[in-house]
Length: 325
Image (cartoon, rainbow, N blue to C red; front, side, top):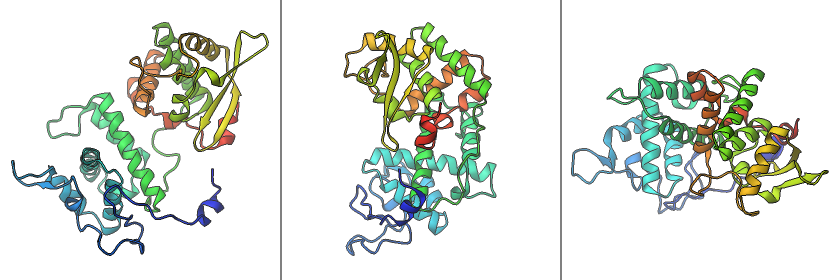
C-alpha cells in the first residue's frame, strides 16, 4: 500500500479506455492521439447513442444523456471518463442509468449539492428511498438486490473520482454510522443463526468480515490451504487472508469462527474457495452485502439499519487495522 508521499510522487501512467481513447481527466491528456478527440457529449460514446423516439436506433434514453451533458465541465469530464472505462456497451448503459437516477434524486433531495460533493450520507439516503418509496416515476420500491447493485455502481464512480482527483466531498467516515460494539455482537449472533439454518458460507463470510475487516476479494479467495491448525492438531486456529492492497495477513480466529471453518473445510476440496455460492460461483460484494443484512435481521437489528449495512462499514482501512485483535 502506498504511503501519502509515495502516492503523490508516483508518476501517473496514462490510462486507456476500452474504446481506445486515453483518459480525458484531469485537465485533458497530452498523450491523447490527435485522431481521437475527446467526445463532446455522452451520446458520442459507443453504446450510449440517445434514443429520441421509438425505433430511431437509440440505445439509451435521451433524457439520461441530457442530464449528464448538462453537468459542469469538470463533472461531465469525470462522468464520461468513468463511462468509457468499461468497454462493454451494456455495462456503460447500466452505469449511465444508475447515475442518472441518482442525479435526479440528488437534484430533488439535496439541490445545494452537486454530484462531486455528495457524500456517503447521500448514497445512504438514496438507497433507503429506493428501498421504501422508490426512485422511479412509478414510485415502486426496488428490490434489495437491485439497490445493492446500484450502490456498488455509484461507489465505483466515486472511487474513480477519487483516483482522478475530481472528488470534492472530502469523503471519509461520513454517512451511515459505524457499527457499535453492541451491533457487532449482534452480527456475531446473526452469523450463528445463519449457520443454524445451514447457510454455512454466508455465516463464515459475515463472521470473518466482522472479525477481520478483510476485503470481499480476500474472503472470496480463502481456501482450506489458508487454514492452519495448532496443537492439538484438530483445532483450526489461524487463517491467512490475501488482500491485493495489504498483502498477506494471518491472525487467529475465535472458537465460533473455528467451528464454521471446520465445517466448510470438511465439505470443500482443499483448493476450492470456502466461501462460495450454492451453485459454486464466486461470491461478490452484492452477495456478501446480502449475507450481512440477513445476519443483522436474524439477530434483531432494525430492518432500516440492517438494509443499509454495507461491507465497507467493517472494512479495515490499513494493514495495521486488519491485524489488530
